[in-house]
Length: 438
Image (cartoon, rainbow, N blue to C red; front, side, top):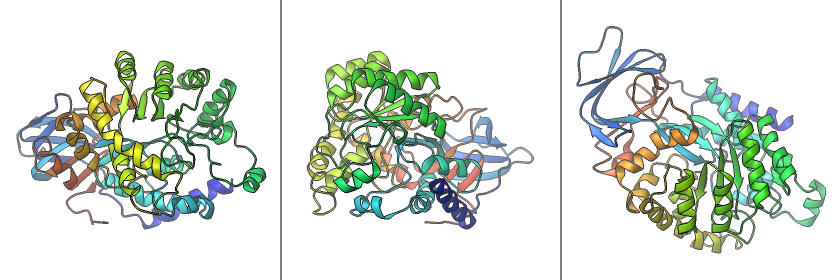
């Protein structure tokens, strides 16, 4: 109870200082160009009428705005659906102090930080995120939904599910005395060692109000443990998680670097594979057959590979994993695209700095993924992964999540770094008349 109250206090205090967005109303967006997420094409001038948080009409050209609609001129800009990042951790951000902070900071500290990270993410053009692991984030989601603080729409996993010693075991790195005092974590803390434990862990996430289930199917890069790719669930355990999640209407995202762990997760029916570093031809074939989405998180791979060169940034048990695994993800994404594996957008932000999420587009294009496909991965594809049909495209009846940037990002992907207009559900958070908070 103390943990929840501290989080609520932090979010409430941050709300008092938050700058309000423009009130929701009737707006006519006059876009010089419009990205059609279904076709991947950039169209000419369009006017988008927004009312009560929804897109009411989309008209070619720039006709005089209908009576009662406030015009917003977006000259020289391309409008497109607000982006979705399918893999973030809004409750944290990597630094050399990250490992010690886990022992020194309270949930209230992480909650205050999360409010700022959410605001940066929204203002960068990401109107929706899927937060794959963090106990603070479900509370942040609720505060955003209630209008207390600005931020993207959040699909929150809550605590990731792991096995003992696995990538999301919260006691990794504890000394024997601390481990003895706290006792071994169990399903309530997201650590399982049987199919029965697996079912209990999913039900606990349901009880806590999660929106999606996250598992760590293999070892990971940043956990305080030696292996970065070994499988960490039995076939029965993964199947029990997926089956129970399905009963509750959940999708399952599987963190996975190693081939065997990925294979078990795909065969069990997970919705997405995150990272996928050592993905081989067999796994790619299975993913195509079963419609399993791939979320590469190239940004995180490059970030940790770079930071592994800095002495002291990571503990020595982490450093070789970061140097080896991180450097491979971009090449895996390139091979997966060529093999026809369906790709959706995710960064693992929280590993790198929040608000810089759009750099993932640059890395995708650098890997040989066409710019139009990369943009679809963060719009239409991401909505499909989330299982929603009211966002990801600019069409009548959809949520009015619309962003704009100077230039044409299909012609020059670098334009994604210049987002200067952000609307979420009809409210303008960045654009004309909105005071900057950078």
